[in-house]
Length: 212
Length: 422
Image 1 (cartoon, one colour):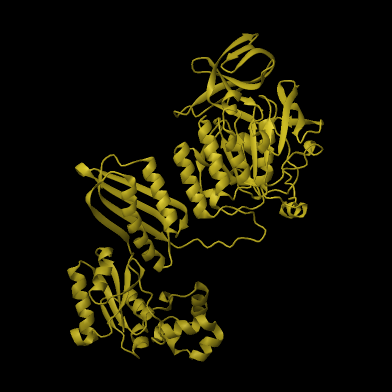
Image 2: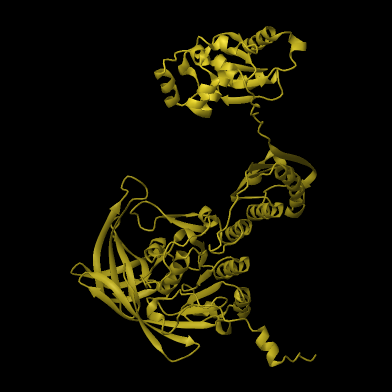
């Protein structure tokens, strides 16, 4: 069967207009990533203590602070509400789904939320799953998520130790910890380094996550 | 003509029973007073004094000790019943004459107006009625005019009839026991649609569904499904019932179904033009139920911190998700705050100390020498309850493994890894 040939004019017509970026990223990251694009998947990857959760909570704080309803699919039951509140999240605008370290449940829950619609920012936290487990997830899941958020005002933020969504992710940020800042008998913060892996620019940004 | 019964003894729950013996509908302004029309009862009982006597007789039979008054205006009848003992018949035109000796202070009026009348030297209702109506209206306004009309028995007011609470219950006994959910839902669906139509006809919505399944061997399974936001769509309710039944299937074949809908006025929400989008309440309700069916009850909702110093103290609520969102902060670039990821349950750990400070940590998932540590931060509380805690917390940096929060639990002197800073 012959595939239909589309003219350039038709392709341009079909292309969705560029949506305004949501300012859900911290100011230190603006040079690298000024905001998150609606209708897209963004991946935040890194090892433990690399600032992944700090970045997610900053995004959730910005979105819930604007009155938006957000969802957090917590694969490993690690979300701390008091930590979220300290980061500025409006907890009453957050739907928290605890998946009891069940990967299939986490994927299904994210799928239900994305297809249900109405949530501005959906966070899928897969940090507590081993990379081998995540690599076994069929690619169709990520593709399905992409179709669910495409052409909607919703955003999907996935966080894991390593990239998982592959072609379905529009943006991928890699985080790494540099040094912890101590002052006397207090932990003051953590210096981080962020690099944009997709679209790749070879640039990095320095961030600091302040301790509460 | 309106009769008023003012109870001063006997069971208050018998007042509506008494009223229903003489009229199909009644007004009950408070627990001790009931008003009903006696129009047309003359053919049955005779003139008004005989009607009043019959009401008193029936009241005595029900154990009610009461004053009874009959007047044209319900409020005049109420006033007379409350302040004149026994039976009082206020024939048209005689209201002022009968109520006249009563003090002015019994009138249902604002204290300021009564004070004005007292300052004018008005002591009784007869004094008040002697004032020219036009002058009262000019000086005391509409309220004064209404008050004078009330004691004079003028004017008219329809009774505010008390509606009996309608119950929406449907019961069906099945011809043969049903084991599968599909035929059971078919039966439930038909009952639900019929009941919903009846509720919607009254302009109400549904806030709760009670489902009672009668099973073989006289076992009964009861379920109560509440909706944070009232619903009117039977499909949404049926989906909730389906999810509930799938999560907790009946243990035996079902032989009977009893469905009850509890109505409430529908939620009227005017969305602001600039308020953020949110899912429709009915879709959100279905989503929450489906998520709960997937991950388990008590795992889905909006976290609410509890008013305690106990670590990790929160509860999940769903109602707040249905409220309209309002921006609580000025849209500015968010600050990056170091977050804590908690291990639930906390990971047991072995900690080697050097000069009372952690030197080496060994735990599932993180192990290594401690390169920096801050602490100890001692917290204790709720010693009077089962939720008591007492522990010394440390923030430690493990070489090549990250920043962790660990603690020593005083009870048993054991160490745990509470979470990781991320």
